[in-house]
Amino acid sequence: MLLFPETTSFLLSVLLLSLNPLVLDFLVAARGYGMALALALYGLYRLILFLTETAGRASHRNLYWASASLGLSIAANLTLLIPAAMLALLFLIALAALDRSTRSATPPAPTRKTKKKREPVQSKGARYLRTGYLHFLLPLAAMLYAFFLIVPIQMAQVGNFYAGLPSPIRSVENLVNLSFSHNIDPDHWNQIPALFNAWNRAIAFAVVPLTVLTGSWLWFGICRKWSGRGTGRKVETAEAALYLTNGTLLGSGAALIAAHYLADLPYPVDRTGLYFVPLMALAGLISTKLMSAAGGPAKAATFAVTALLAIFVLQFAAQFNTSRFTVWWYDADTRNIVAAIAAREKPAHQAVRVGATWQLEPSINFYRKTWALDWMAPVDRSGPQGDYDYYVLALGDTGLAKAQHLQKLYESHRSETILAVR
Image (cartoon, rainbow, N blue to C red; front, top):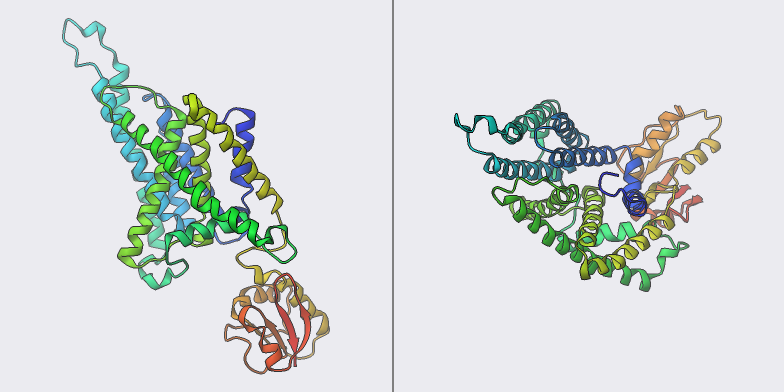
């Protein structure tokens, strides 16, 4: 409601931000991605509130909430370190520009003759903005210090950050494909190769660059406006939102490119680049709002953009599913497989050994513990090669069933996982 008070734009923004199937996957995956994303966006909201309220009247409580949210988002998942740092940096730059603008607009110190005409509001606003640095940075620094004391992040090496892709283009394609061709299987409507490959490439190489370019053009205009001395104008909500959102988008991209060349870190893949999805959506929505307010040809173009965003929403909604994660598609039938083993071994009189593809180890052990299957030996990550009572094969291990003449008890069309015995 802060950015899009109109019913239509509000509904479109909510659906665009919440129905993306890639985001929905990681909102429920218990790995901290959803929590980190929610905290970062809440921090963004609080910073927008601070910047848009009249200096001297807004509460520093917004800064406490913002700094706490950004610090906790990094603690929830380290992938949010770069965007949270960029958001904090952009806010401090904006605070410095507005502070300079407010001070230049503040009337000179009163003399005896002008004492009665003194207007203390402006000088109070200048002091208020200057104290904002401490109210924002001190809680954030304290929270991050506590996080680094608890978590041995200093022991991490570059090799620990292995999940990723070798080029930014492939990274963009990955996020687009997982958003617009999510949960692909042979029976699903988005499996039509020619149509959806062309559609996804058009989004990755036309829509995404145009959104970034349009947002950047508006962003630089906002920066020039704020850097002007003596303006003393109230900051508009949409301008503050685009400045922080598009700036974080651009800054995070630049930081990732620098990290790749300086430290050989890979570019984001699916979950490690999850924050780009809402940032891109917000940048596009806010840019559309600003262009519509400008009038002229820009306003006419916003109708086509709005229609395109509506198509995106429909496509997201059509891909809604609760059957599997697209990243961990091979794990969709692990529950059924463990249940099948339990049904065959009930009652079990001896220890049962299961050899499994290593990616399935956490989920098999989860059900073993949750269902109290004490007769099943803990599954390790040594793989399915060897002598076992049961074989659970996924990914590149499925050929083992034929090579070792195993008898298939269960074969999933959905996850391509096999349960077999000798």
